[in-house]
View 1 (tube, rainbow, N blue to C red):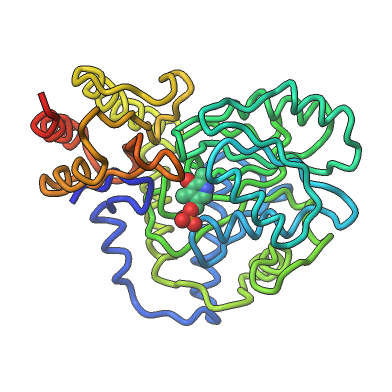
View 2 (view 1 turned 45 degrees about the vertical axis):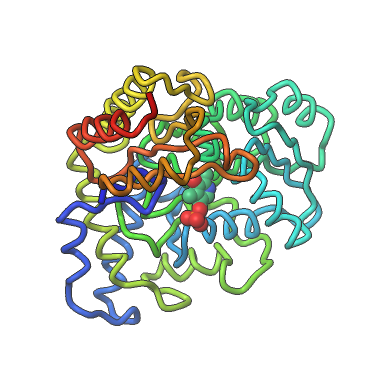
Length: 355
Ligand SMILES: *Cc1c(COP(=O)(O)O)cnc(C)c1O
Protein backbone atom coordinates (compact mmCIF):
# COMPACT_ATOMS: atom_id res chain seq x y z
CA UNK A 1 0.00 0.00 0.00
CA UNK A 2 1.41 3.40 -0.99
CA UNK A 3 0.57 5.98 1.68
CA UNK A 4 -0.18 9.39 0.16
CA UNK A 5 -1.58 10.64 3.49
CA UNK A 6 0.47 13.19 5.47
CA UNK A 7 2.08 10.70 7.82
CA UNK A 8 2.66 8.10 8.93
CA UNK A 9 4.67 7.39 5.81
CA UNK A 10 5.92 4.32 3.99
CA UNK A 11 9.14 3.11 5.63
CA UNK A 12 12.33 2.12 3.89
CA UNK A 13 13.47 -1.46 4.53
CA UNK A 14 16.40 -0.06 6.42
CA UNK A 15 14.23 1.92 8.86
CA UNK A 16 11.76 -0.96 9.28
CA UNK A 17 14.59 -3.38 10.10
CA UNK A 18 15.91 -0.98 12.72
CA UNK A 19 12.80 -1.80 14.77
CA UNK A 20 14.14 -5.33 15.29
CA UNK A 21 17.26 -4.38 17.24
CA UNK A 22 17.84 -5.76 20.76
CA UNK A 23 15.57 -4.90 23.68
CA UNK A 24 16.90 -2.05 25.76
CA UNK A 25 16.19 -0.37 29.10
CA UNK A 26 15.76 3.40 28.95
CA UNK A 27 17.81 3.77 32.18
CA UNK A 28 20.94 2.15 30.72
CA UNK A 29 23.86 4.05 29.16
CA UNK A 30 23.23 2.46 25.71
CA UNK A 31 19.92 4.27 25.60
CA UNK A 32 21.58 7.53 26.61
CA UNK A 33 24.01 7.19 23.70
CA UNK A 34 21.23 6.44 21.23
CA UNK A 35 19.25 9.44 22.48
CA UNK A 36 22.26 11.76 22.31
CA UNK A 37 23.04 10.59 18.77
CA UNK A 38 19.49 11.39 17.64
CA UNK A 39 19.53 14.80 19.34
CA UNK A 40 22.80 15.66 17.59
CA UNK A 41 21.52 14.58 14.18
CA UNK A 42 18.32 16.61 14.59
CA UNK A 43 20.39 19.76 15.20
CA UNK A 44 22.67 18.84 12.27
CA UNK A 45 19.63 18.72 9.96
CA UNK A 46 19.65 22.54 10.04
CA UNK A 47 23.29 23.04 11.08
CA UNK A 48 22.38 24.36 14.54
CA UNK A 49 25.05 24.75 17.25
CA UNK A 50 24.53 22.63 20.36
CA UNK A 51 25.54 25.47 22.65
CA UNK A 52 22.64 27.63 21.56
CA UNK A 53 19.95 25.09 20.62
CA UNK A 54 18.71 21.77 21.95
CA UNK A 55 16.70 19.00 20.34
CA UNK A 56 14.25 17.64 22.90
CA UNK A 57 12.59 14.26 22.30
CA UNK A 58 9.11 13.52 23.61
CA UNK A 59 6.90 10.46 23.23
CA UNK A 60 3.74 11.09 21.24
CA UNK A 61 2.56 12.28 17.86
CA UNK A 62 3.34 15.73 16.45
CA UNK A 63 0.65 17.36 18.56
CA UNK A 64 2.54 16.33 21.73
CA UNK A 65 5.56 18.30 20.53
CA UNK A 66 3.40 21.31 19.60
CA UNK A 67 1.68 21.20 23.00
CA UNK A 68 5.03 20.95 24.80
CA UNK A 69 6.37 23.93 22.84
CA UNK A 70 3.29 26.14 23.30
CA UNK A 71 2.93 25.42 27.04
CA UNK A 72 6.59 25.53 28.10
CA UNK A 73 7.79 28.89 26.78
CA UNK A 74 5.25 31.76 26.97
CA UNK A 75 5.90 33.70 30.23
CA UNK A 76 2.98 33.96 32.67
CA UNK A 77 2.66 37.74 32.39
CA UNK A 78 2.82 37.92 28.58
CA UNK A 79 0.74 36.94 25.54
CA UNK A 80 1.16 34.65 22.56
CA UNK A 81 0.19 35.95 19.12
CA UNK A 82 -1.17 33.11 17.01
CA UNK A 83 -1.52 33.19 13.24
CA UNK A 84 -4.09 30.61 12.11
CA UNK A 85 -5.16 29.71 8.58
CA UNK A 86 -6.13 26.09 8.98
CA UNK A 87 -6.84 23.22 11.35
CA UNK A 88 -3.35 23.16 12.85
CA UNK A 89 -3.16 26.90 13.53
CA UNK A 90 -6.56 26.66 15.21
CA UNK A 91 -5.33 23.67 17.22
CA UNK A 92 -2.56 25.89 18.63
CA UNK A 93 -5.21 28.41 19.70
CA UNK A 94 -7.15 25.57 21.34
CA UNK A 95 -4.06 24.53 23.32
CA UNK A 96 -3.60 28.08 24.64
CA UNK A 97 -7.30 28.20 25.57
CA UNK A 98 -7.17 24.91 27.48
CA UNK A 99 -4.07 25.99 29.42
CA UNK A 100 -5.46 29.53 29.84
CA UNK A 101 -2.37 31.04 28.25
CA UNK A 102 -3.17 34.67 27.35
CA UNK A 103 -3.15 35.03 23.58
CA UNK A 104 -4.26 37.06 20.60
CA UNK A 105 -5.53 35.14 17.61
CA UNK A 106 -5.22 36.36 14.03
CA UNK A 107 -7.73 34.00 12.47
CA UNK A 108 -7.79 33.73 8.68
CA UNK A 109 -9.92 31.88 6.16
CA UNK A 110 -8.43 28.47 5.50
CA UNK A 111 -7.87 29.50 1.89
CA UNK A 112 -6.06 32.69 2.79
CA UNK A 113 -2.41 33.56 3.28
CA UNK A 114 -1.31 35.05 6.62
CA UNK A 115 -1.95 38.78 6.61
CA UNK A 116 1.45 40.38 7.16
CA UNK A 117 -0.02 43.86 7.61
CA UNK A 118 -2.18 42.67 10.49
CA UNK A 119 0.83 40.87 11.95
CA UNK A 120 2.99 43.98 11.78
CA UNK A 121 0.21 46.10 13.28
CA UNK A 122 0.00 43.68 16.22
CA UNK A 123 3.75 43.62 16.70
CA UNK A 124 3.83 47.41 16.63
CA UNK A 125 0.96 48.03 19.04
CA UNK A 126 0.89 45.04 21.44
CA UNK A 127 3.85 45.15 23.83
CA UNK A 128 2.52 42.23 25.89
CA UNK A 129 3.08 39.85 22.99
CA UNK A 130 6.14 37.77 23.85
CA UNK A 131 6.07 35.23 20.99
CA UNK A 132 4.44 34.74 17.60
CA UNK A 133 3.25 31.20 16.89
CA UNK A 134 2.59 29.94 13.36
CA UNK A 135 2.30 26.72 11.38
CA UNK A 136 4.96 26.51 8.66
CA UNK A 137 3.29 24.08 6.28
CA UNK A 138 -0.47 24.24 6.97
CA UNK A 139 -1.40 20.68 6.05
CA UNK A 140 -5.10 21.59 5.90
CA UNK A 141 -4.60 23.14 2.46
CA UNK A 142 -0.97 22.37 1.57
CA UNK A 143 -0.09 26.03 1.96
CA UNK A 144 3.50 26.84 2.84
CA UNK A 145 3.07 29.92 5.00
CA UNK A 146 5.47 32.78 4.26
CA UNK A 147 7.77 31.99 7.17
CA UNK A 148 10.55 34.09 5.71
CA UNK A 149 8.38 37.24 5.73
CA UNK A 150 6.86 36.41 9.11
CA UNK A 151 10.29 35.64 10.55
CA UNK A 152 11.81 38.85 9.25
CA UNK A 153 9.04 40.84 10.97
CA UNK A 154 9.74 38.88 14.17
CA UNK A 155 13.40 39.77 13.86
CA UNK A 156 12.65 43.44 13.19
CA UNK A 157 10.34 43.69 16.23
CA UNK A 158 12.54 41.40 18.31
CA UNK A 159 9.71 38.96 19.04
CA UNK A 160 10.75 35.29 18.91
CA UNK A 161 8.84 32.91 16.65
CA UNK A 162 7.50 29.48 17.63
CA UNK A 163 6.88 27.23 14.63
CA UNK A 164 4.73 24.16 14.12
CA UNK A 165 7.08 22.54 11.63
CA UNK A 166 5.49 19.11 11.97
CA UNK A 167 4.90 18.69 8.24
CA UNK A 168 7.87 20.72 6.95
CA UNK A 169 10.89 19.88 9.14
CA UNK A 170 13.29 17.93 6.95
CA UNK A 171 11.92 19.08 3.60
CA UNK A 172 11.59 22.87 3.68
CA UNK A 173 14.00 25.65 4.50
CA UNK A 174 14.13 26.87 8.10
CA UNK A 175 16.52 29.73 8.87
CA UNK A 176 16.50 29.64 12.65
CA UNK A 177 18.70 32.68 13.26
CA UNK A 178 17.51 35.00 10.50
CA UNK A 179 13.84 34.30 11.15
CA UNK A 180 14.17 34.54 14.95
CA UNK A 181 12.88 30.96 15.39
CA UNK A 182 13.04 30.26 19.12
CA UNK A 183 11.44 26.81 18.83
CA UNK A 184 10.17 24.44 16.20
CA UNK A 185 8.04 21.36 16.89
CA UNK A 186 8.15 18.35 14.57
CA UNK A 187 7.79 14.59 14.41
CA UNK A 188 9.67 11.43 13.42
CA UNK A 189 7.02 10.09 11.07
CA UNK A 190 6.56 12.78 8.43
CA UNK A 191 9.40 14.30 6.36
CA UNK A 192 12.08 12.42 8.34
CA UNK A 193 10.57 9.01 7.40
CA UNK A 194 10.72 7.48 10.88
CA UNK A 195 7.93 5.60 12.65
CA UNK A 196 5.16 7.25 14.68
CA UNK A 197 5.67 7.52 18.43
CA UNK A 198 8.45 10.06 18.82
CA UNK A 199 8.21 13.78 18.26
CA UNK A 200 10.65 16.55 19.10
CA UNK A 201 11.18 20.25 19.62
CA UNK A 202 14.21 22.21 18.51
CA UNK A 203 14.47 24.97 21.07
CA UNK A 204 16.78 27.89 21.70
CA UNK A 205 18.21 27.22 25.12
CA UNK A 206 17.56 30.78 26.35
CA UNK A 207 13.80 29.99 26.17
CA UNK A 208 13.90 27.25 28.79
CA UNK A 209 13.45 27.17 32.56
CA UNK A 210 11.06 30.10 32.88
CA UNK A 211 7.58 28.58 33.11
CA UNK A 212 6.04 25.23 33.88
CA UNK A 213 2.42 24.46 33.09
CA UNK A 214 2.32 20.69 32.95
CA UNK A 215 3.98 17.56 34.22
CA UNK A 216 4.39 15.31 31.21
CA UNK A 217 5.09 17.80 28.43
CA UNK A 218 7.44 20.21 30.20
CA UNK A 219 10.23 21.00 27.75
CA UNK A 220 12.69 22.23 30.38
CA UNK A 221 12.47 19.01 32.40
CA UNK A 222 13.06 16.90 29.29
CA UNK A 223 15.94 19.06 28.14
CA UNK A 224 17.71 19.10 31.47
CA UNK A 225 17.61 15.32 31.83
CA UNK A 226 18.37 14.61 28.18
CA UNK A 227 21.45 16.83 28.45
CA UNK A 228 22.62 14.31 31.08
CA UNK A 229 21.75 11.37 28.80
CA UNK A 230 18.67 10.66 30.92
CA UNK A 231 14.92 10.83 30.47
CA UNK A 232 12.10 11.79 32.84
CA UNK A 233 9.82 9.00 31.56
CA UNK A 234 9.96 5.78 29.57
CA UNK A 235 10.68 6.52 25.92
CA UNK A 236 9.49 4.41 22.96
CA UNK A 237 12.85 2.72 22.51
CA UNK A 238 12.11 0.99 19.19
CA UNK A 239 10.96 4.25 17.60
CA UNK A 240 14.30 5.76 18.68
CA UNK A 241 16.14 3.00 16.81
CA UNK A 242 14.05 3.76 13.75
CA UNK A 243 14.47 7.53 14.00
CA UNK A 244 18.23 7.18 14.37
CA UNK A 245 18.35 5.05 11.22
CA UNK A 246 16.00 7.41 9.36
CA UNK A 247 18.26 10.34 10.26
CA UNK A 248 21.32 8.49 8.93
CA UNK A 249 19.45 7.82 5.69
CA UNK A 250 18.35 11.47 5.58
CA UNK A 251 21.93 12.70 6.06
CA UNK A 252 23.40 10.31 3.49
CA UNK A 253 20.82 11.36 0.91
CA UNK A 254 21.82 15.01 1.31
CA UNK A 255 19.62 16.40 4.09
CA UNK A 256 16.66 18.71 3.66
CA UNK A 257 17.69 20.27 0.31
CA UNK A 258 17.87 16.80 -1.27
CA UNK A 259 14.59 15.74 0.28
CA UNK A 260 13.00 18.98 -0.89
CA UNK A 261 14.19 18.26 -4.46
CA UNK A 262 12.88 14.68 -4.40
CA UNK A 263 9.48 15.73 -3.07
CA UNK A 264 9.32 18.56 -5.64
CA UNK A 265 9.87 16.05 -8.46
CA UNK A 266 7.15 13.77 -7.11
CA UNK A 267 4.77 16.67 -6.54
CA UNK A 268 5.31 18.02 -10.05
CA UNK A 269 4.24 14.64 -11.43
CA UNK A 270 1.15 14.59 -9.21
CA UNK A 271 0.17 18.18 -10.04
CA UNK A 272 0.79 17.78 -13.78
CA UNK A 273 -1.18 14.54 -13.79
CA UNK A 274 -4.08 16.17 -11.97
CA UNK A 275 -4.05 19.10 -14.38
CA UNK A 276 -4.10 16.72 -17.37
CA UNK A 277 -7.20 15.10 -15.87
CA UNK A 278 -8.90 18.46 -15.28
CA UNK A 279 -8.47 18.40 -11.50
CA UNK A 280 -7.74 21.83 -9.99
CA UNK A 281 -5.39 22.74 -7.17
CA UNK A 282 -7.12 24.36 -4.19
CA UNK A 283 -4.47 27.08 -3.86
CA UNK A 284 -1.95 28.23 -6.48
CA UNK A 285 1.06 25.94 -6.97
CA UNK A 286 3.53 28.69 -5.99
CA UNK A 287 2.04 28.81 -2.48
CA UNK A 288 1.89 25.04 -2.07
CA UNK A 289 4.53 23.06 -0.18
CA UNK A 290 6.41 20.27 -1.94
CA UNK A 291 5.04 17.94 0.75
CA UNK A 292 1.28 17.98 0.12
CA UNK A 293 -1.24 19.41 -2.32
CA UNK A 294 -4.97 19.83 -1.92
CA UNK A 295 -7.16 19.34 -5.00
CA UNK A 296 -10.79 20.12 -5.69
CA UNK A 297 -12.85 16.95 -5.98
CA UNK A 298 -14.08 16.36 -9.53
CA UNK A 299 -17.81 16.90 -9.99
CA UNK A 300 -19.90 13.76 -9.43
CA UNK A 301 -17.12 11.99 -7.59
CA UNK A 302 -17.63 11.97 -3.81
CA UNK A 303 -14.47 11.68 -1.72
CA UNK A 304 -15.29 8.25 -0.29
CA UNK A 305 -15.73 6.79 -3.77
CA UNK A 306 -12.44 8.26 -4.99
CA UNK A 307 -10.68 7.08 -1.83
CA UNK A 308 -12.06 3.54 -2.00
CA UNK A 309 -11.29 3.08 -5.68
CA UNK A 310 -7.74 4.33 -5.23
CA UNK A 311 -7.31 2.10 -2.21
CA UNK A 312 -8.37 -0.93 -4.29
CA UNK A 313 -5.48 0.01 -6.57
CA UNK A 314 -3.00 0.34 -3.73
CA UNK A 315 -3.04 4.05 -2.83
CA UNK A 316 -4.27 5.80 0.33
CA UNK A 317 -5.20 9.47 -0.17
CA UNK A 318 -6.42 11.89 2.49
CA UNK A 319 -9.74 13.66 3.00
CA UNK A 320 -10.23 17.37 3.59
CA UNK A 321 -10.98 18.58 7.12
CA UNK A 322 -13.85 20.69 8.48
CA UNK A 323 -16.17 22.03 5.81
CA UNK A 324 -13.60 21.13 3.15
CA UNK A 325 -14.40 17.43 3.69
CA UNK A 326 -16.86 17.26 0.83
CA UNK A 327 -14.89 19.54 -1.49
CA UNK A 328 -11.25 18.50 -1.59
CA UNK A 329 -8.84 15.58 -1.41
CA UNK A 330 -5.19 15.72 -0.44
CA UNK A 331 -2.10 13.97 -1.74
CA UNK A 332 1.15 13.89 0.19
CA UNK A 333 4.43 12.65 -1.29
CA UNK A 334 6.46 11.94 1.86
CA UNK A 335 8.03 8.59 2.62
CA UNK A 336 10.01 5.82 0.96
CA UNK A 337 8.13 5.88 -2.34
CA UNK A 338 9.33 6.33 -5.92
CA UNK A 339 8.60 8.32 -9.08
CA UNK A 340 7.23 5.08 -10.53
CA UNK A 341 4.68 5.00 -7.73
CA UNK A 342 3.65 8.52 -8.76
CA UNK A 343 3.22 7.35 -12.37
CA UNK A 344 1.12 4.40 -11.23
CA UNK A 345 -0.93 6.77 -9.09
CA UNK A 346 -1.64 8.89 -12.15
CA UNK A 347 -2.67 5.77 -14.11
CA UNK A 348 -4.99 4.72 -11.29
CA UNK A 349 -6.52 8.19 -11.08
CA UNK A 350 -7.13 8.35 -14.82
CA UNK A 351 -8.90 4.96 -14.77
CA UNK A 352 -11.20 6.08 -11.99
CA UNK A 353 -12.31 9.51 -13.16
CA UNK A 354 -15.70 9.70 -14.80
CA UNK A 355 -15.42 10.80 -18.46
C1 LIG B 1 0.51 16.14 11.28
C2 LIG B 1 0.53 17.51 11.82
C3 LIG B 1 0.49 17.77 13.20
C4 LIG B 1 0.40 16.68 14.23
O1 LIG B 1 -0.65 15.81 14.06
P1 LIG B 1 -0.61 14.42 14.85
O2 LIG B 1 -1.89 13.77 14.47
O3 LIG B 1 -0.48 14.71 16.28
O4 LIG B 1 0.60 13.71 14.32
C5 LIG B 1 0.63 19.07 13.64
N1 LIG B 1 0.76 20.09 12.77
C6 LIG B 1 0.80 19.89 11.44
C7 LIG B 1 0.97 21.07 10.55
C8 LIG B 1 0.67 18.60 10.92
O5 LIG B 1 0.70 18.40 9.60
